[in-house]
Image (cartoon, rainbow, N blue to C red; front, side, top):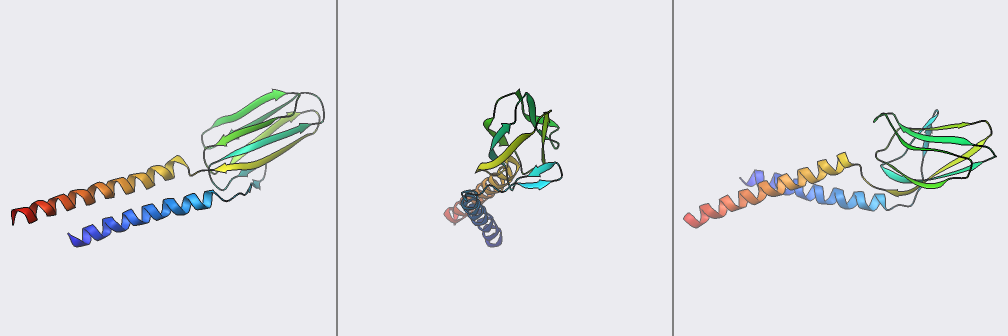
Length: 147
């Protein structure tokens, strides 16, 4: 029982420390976007600021997520765009611009957050180990009370 308690306490400690470290890392102000061919990858799920500056005429801009096979952002306009877009995971994403005239497009990371999958794993492991540890402690107390 002591070995099982030690393992569960270790899992709890690692989970708490990983959440704290992750929070500290995600607070770093940086806007790293890695271009890969015609797409881009971001370091984690994040909110980006999309800025466009068209040279005139109508244009269409879209951000496509090939992993989910869906379009995250789509707009057809003749005006500049200054919009926050939420990216649900680290990427890749593709920016598609359809225009007869040049359009300058800039992406800047505004806020980071861990993906839902990572949070589900961390909360699941921490919660299950906490429940198991509580159960073991209750069983030991019942045994000690009977003695």
